[in-house]
Image (cartoon, helix red, strand yellow):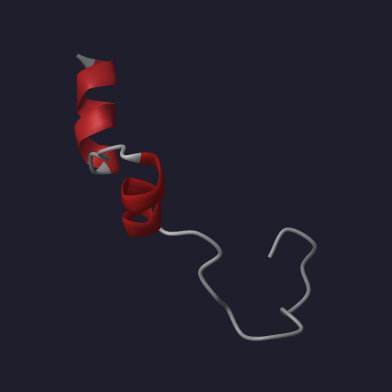
Length: 40
């Protein structure tokens, strides 16, 4: 954690790529694909 303390509750997903794909109609690529394209 950034503040050095343990979380108060359990971890949870706030928003997922699957939900964004359905709600926004966007397609997502894995991060390693984007980073390899950026590094060129």
